[in-house]
Image (cartoon, rainbow, N blue to C red):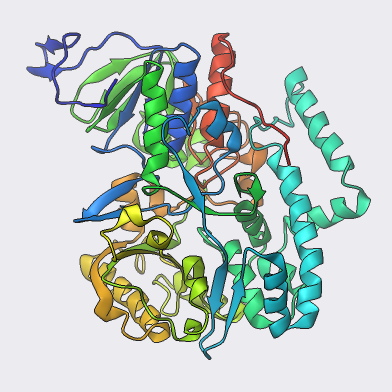
Length: 563
């Protein structure tokens, strides 16, 4: 069944004479899912696969949320927001048969960190080549990396097994929660005493402190540190950023843990495959009008009212919106307890990132890579010390974008030529740090353009002539991410990944099992466990809880320990 827009006619719709306008009064659905981002699509697909009659509502005229591909410049397909794939759970990929619906994830190789002095540090697919490259900068660090990789993998293997599990409530004495706590404790004990101590330190350390325990060369530490602050409103010297690195290290492509890849055709290919699966199981996708209010009567949800006044009804409503957007913007305060509202307002969801999507006439020429052009096919980072990263954070704290920002660049068209015309290229540029407001005031178009120029000027210093190759630039600040995608304050994880907002604390204590304060209301977005990234785990976990409450057969896998 194809997506339809809210303005199209349908035999099951009728005229609401009291309002004096056409209003949709469709049949009552088993469930309504709000937001066709990847988690909403995952949730809707698993519910439909279990036999539920599901309506998926999206405010934009296109699906995908932040997992989207759009032709903003003629002939170029941009991955407008999210831009690489690794965290997508393989259980979801297989459970929804996404390969059957055309999804291909193509791995790309290596990365490079460029220094202002013309040097660089490259990382390659071949581990022996990578070791020689690190030894070129520091033989000691090359030896230490063996220990570093081992320790990071231990952390990854421990946390990965709980990604597709509902976080247990430690204050509950329900058998299910107690059993899950027991399983977590059992897995923890298997690590051994020394590793448990290391884990407790790891989760509370800054990425700068953690890397200091392994490496000495500033360029190597800078290359590793970037993953600890991407999407985070914290600096490399802030406690807790070591976990953010782990969040970016625990994904995989084709079973290769830590690898990253491109969805062929752009990140929107993930959303398209999920939507095709959803509709293949009888689901309906409606685009073109957002939800104005989640309807509640006598403590139970009854449906949703759209921004155009139309209403749709179901006993189950699932929100893929951010935690604050769901309860502060789309629910009547009278339906919520004041204490709950206070906690929602205190939920940390500060934006810190921006993005440029650039159409290029030809490949840029990076001075440092003239003798090693192979590295341009992977991640390129423009930073060379943790001190520069921390100073970039200082600008964010001062209420402005970083004047010397951390830049993570990729040229997906080198791996996936379907995204551009022949011989042309698309560059994705992720930028840290970019505040949700400028000195406490809303962004202006002029400030947005100045931010974009700051980034382009930075790239130009590493690749002379870069500006002359630009055909088109799309600049996205937290303002655009919130207005267009619905990410509150532009936070790409739908909530910060800090210890007070992880596991049974995500989004807040007492509501970490995907159920909302009204009966029949559920949450499936990245504001919930296990957090952000194109992972699809929150959507899948929420679907399992819904099916459990409805006493329906479970269609959601709970994790395949194939590490």
